[in-house]
Image 1 (cartoon, rainbow over the protein chains, first blue to last red):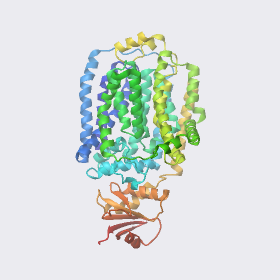
Image 2 (image 1 turned 90 degrees about the vertical axis):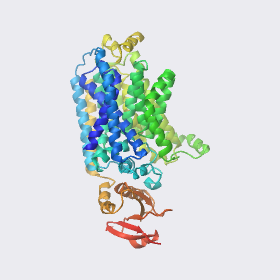
Image 3 (image 1 turned 120 degrees about the horizontal axis):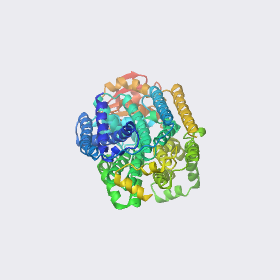
Image 4 (image 1 turned 180 degrees about the vertical axis):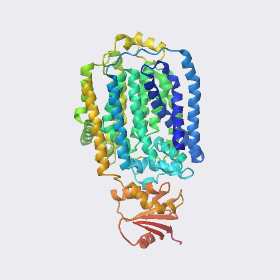
Length: 482
Length: 130
């Protein structure tokens, strides 16, 4: 129980850290604003705590001290920020944005709650049958959590080239540690390695992802679209089948979505400091979750530099810096260097790149994965097309925010390149990972797609003009742009 | 339009749940981690928590051998398993066997003597004195 209390403290710390985002102008119902902020904040707080935990372990502290101190540091930092920024926000008295009516909203909310309940029920049934998760859970993520939770000196086995019997692909000591460290914190403070902890954390990250998706679309468009997007996510086989697996793909999907959400907020704020810094921190946490997250972080940095120049990039980097420091220490000092999947020579790489059969095999696997996201009659493409047919597209200015789709698309392109180059058996590699790579970008893709479709019913011009969520200054700028 | 989207999504969510339920019913614990935890529980209690432990098996290299190793590694973590033969021999080793065999002779081949046979293919070995 102690572990969960400290984890809650870390999550509340993350909630407090988000105080710089002008929540008084939240456009939807207050409870939804709290839920959205809690979802974002919990992910932020838990991620930052895992960074501090690993640093303290590396410094040589006993494991229970590491877990306790890490949670309390984040909780206290969040409380300090909340006290300073939260009070200033209350005093600013910024007017709440006008809500425009959304008929049948209750029906969307009910359907959303039903879908979330089914996710929880599916997780419960699968977890009861396989409490230790799927293959990667017991061979990578939870195994490394056991090492970390054992403290000094055996925690270093989590980054030993010997785990997995030294076999390529058996235990991946070079994988980042966010998920394993979070499980280890709970285990260390609870004093036992119960399978409920990683299972509950897997469900938590799935729920946080749904919470951010509903909240982000309520923030940027309307609550109806938020619930519909969450419904499409929760009902997709791609997502539902992975909730109980206890893998790092849903946590990565969460951090990718949260970072993209903050980038949209940053663009609305004319690349204001607070959302960009959070975008940087969340993108860096995706790099601390899985190696694919490092690619995402690089894409976010490159895209921000190209789109809005050096100043925005510096703000992004300022937010990412604390986590990047930990990722850097991990990759350069702690984790073994592995060449792993890539060819040893340029000629071997060129031969793989110029093999049309490999391109076709990967393209077919991508198409199959996309087709199998949901049954055809509930496929997101069909339902989105139907929605766009009925409600139309967002107005031209709003549609531009669909640029965020570039990021998941670029992630999938980078994954495609990795498959082209892999020295592992291509079919095995695709069979064991392709659906999870799509899962990593699926929530962020849904956000981007729903930013491009119209609201239902169509918002009045006045409501559209008020849709920017931020300072009065930036909302005014939004009006000027139109 | 909204009603169709809602109905289809909710129906897909029910279908997704049903698939999860059927999978759980037909193949619970497909990698038999629960069984591995039981098999190695007695042996784990005899080993120091942070030990590096030798590992020997009768399975030829392949998927079954990899799964057997990973089951044992997960069950015995935070001890670290080192497959034998190895350049440096740990003080303790574990045998994970899939069929009856001469456990003394198998251990001796790697430089170990039997400390305790826990049955069910699980054997604890101690490094032989040179």
